[in-house]
Image (spheres, helix red, strand yellow):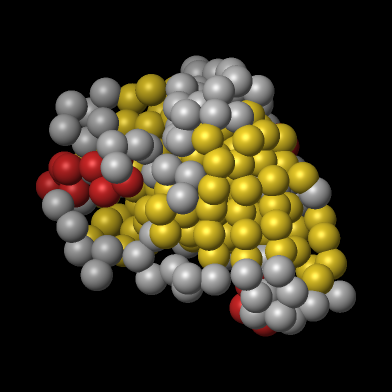
Length: 123
Length: 107
């Protein structure tokens, strides 16, 4: 079965960096793009961007350029989100989610999600 | 960016009730509209894609309709496990944007 398993919660100080992993299994990693979605405490869902698994090319949403980096290790079917120069407002749950474009009638949809990684930024 | 507006933002309903949630896009998005359910402390689950297609494994009491700018998610008979927050999402144009969510609570 398809699984996306994310790394555990992180507590970081302002200015530090964090790297969240999203290990996948149960499907061919290179055939589905990976997206990242942020959910601040008590708030809604915010799309951060996506990375093409076949090319490694990332696309970042406005507001997620500069300090946010998507990367891959295709040898272990894992996607990563790195955030540098952390700020208090980065405190949120971060989700990886698979884009099942071909399975959703040639329209983007997010059919499988990681369990989420809570990143807390506090001094 | 296309703005997605959900209404209501919250509602109270009883088990067995018929529940309707509305999502309006700021521009026409054809049928590039998905619905997700999120329970507290959990990741969202895909319920409906391309406005009206039921994701595999989702109970048939969930249905979606609409095209253009106006969409509806209907739960025909609310069950205890349906109390959650529901989000619409447009994927017609980048960036894919979510509505603000509708929290369905127990009356």
